[in-house]
Amino acid sequence: MPIKFKKLREAATVTIILAFTNTGMLSQATAQTKNPTLAVIPAGFNFPTPGYVIQQWITNAGSSDTTVSAAGLKNIRDHGWDLWNGMTQMTGISSGGATIAEIEVPIWTTWPDQTQALKPIFSKSGASELLFELSQETAMRRPKQFKHLKKAEVKAKADTAAAPEIVYTLETERFNRTWVISANTPQIVPFGQGIYSILGKANIDNYANDFPASYSPGAKAILDFDARAIETKPVYYALKSKGTSIMPYWQGTSSSATTNTTNPVPETWKTCVIIDAENTATTGMRVATANEQNGAYAAPGLQCASYLYAPIGMVFVQSLTALEAAAFEGQPDIKAGDFGALMAMHVNSKETDSWTWQTFYWQGDPSFETNSPGSLEGQPSSLGAPWSSYAMCTAYDQSYDRGATMNLCYNPYLETSPGIPDGIQSNCVSCHGSANVAAQGTENPPSYPSNYDKLIDFGGSEFKGVMKTDFSWTIADQQ
Image (cartoon, rainbow, N blue to C red):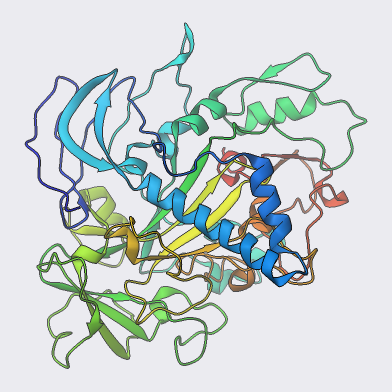
């Protein structure tokens, strides 16, 4: 159903509110409000699904019976699409039960980013009242994954891991209400006396120090998040808000698709798509004509050899602030009011012990997509534009067959970086299962896996001296 403009209404807690339009654009807002209602995924999208049900899908996916295995894999993909469909439903913005403005936005855009979610938010009266300011301004930044090399590897990879002159992608993180409450709830050490916050590295260090010395490697960990918690990591690419812009288009890791088959970052992709900001149609991706790239904005350094065309109605975009535009360094033509186009998003939910993991990335139309690491296959008919333009891969375990075949699921806009070891062979579970806060003096604590050739034992000796953070690098990376 097309999304219609709605009349904006100023409220006491709102400075400026912007609209989500039928082109799939979320304009930038400074809608700051105390006690915000963080929208939840509505009924009808199978969230949350009981963990024992998901675990049975995982078991079935590894079955030697091909019929059972196919059914298990389908259940996992269906669940991933349900999450995507649910979190992209439209909702009104409200505060304390009162409507702020008569506009609708996708549910996930009402969730706080990392700058808001990692601050104390509880009132003195208890957990039922959240005290923080929610803003539609996002804290876009260079992807933090690019900085996860171990110290011993940094020098050897200094040339490739150094910050580029041109910033092609920015990321942020968004967390649903349950995640925020879980992160802000004090925790009690098993068999200990202390009550600790997990906000900030110093608090986690103190928490870890209160564990009994007899605890085995890998057993020292924060308490699990609530089963309804969701983490997301949106990734954006800069486009002009007028005319046409050229955007790299993922076609895989072969030499015909990229100039760098080891680290096929977006600026190395040989296929590009011309995005037309004047065309708000939600279908119509095609091969570009010979002259359509003329006059189109392109970031410096792209390796485009062939071109496709797509209307902007097939892409979710949001208006950039001046600070966000400036964060796309090396692209001086990107200004406030231009677009941050959603290129990809990691989504993980705590419905099962090791979370569910799905990654979405822009592919536009099945006629042009590549089938790795994911695909557009299996989308529900109710999934509308622009969300139906995003392919999905899933990995609900490191492997479904006890390590004989490792699962593959990664974000082409992030894990292709030279700052991430073996990213194009990665899966979400192996990577996030290694998330930890290391005690002072711990040598070579677990970081991003150096390869994904075999299962990682999250209770192994390499986890001695660290505090695991329930698969959350967001918690682990705090200062």
